[in-house]
Amino acid sequence: MSSRRWAGFVVALLAVAGVAAAALLSQRQEAALLRAELELARLEAADQARLAAENDRLRAQQVSPAALERLRADHAAVVRLRAELEALRKK
Image 1: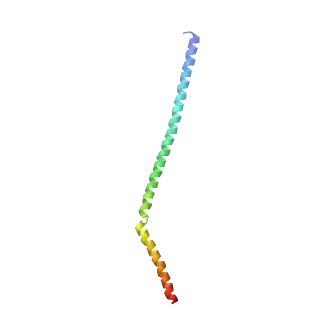
Image 2: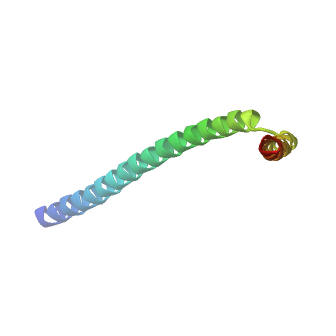
């Protein structure tokens, strides 16, 4: 093989190696980005699960609509009774 062909072969081989190295580097960077994105998604999923559990806990402590209605009725009755008591005191 002549030295000119040999030099051309070496240059072509180096070019192919450079392209392969660039492709490998690009894939590693993309893999690192995907790992970071996956970790963020895992953290968000854990946070969402924690918030769902907190929501369930708070719902369990919430006053039922029927109990709330009874409390409102009792409050209104107390206001009426106070007004009646005040009226009786004035007589």
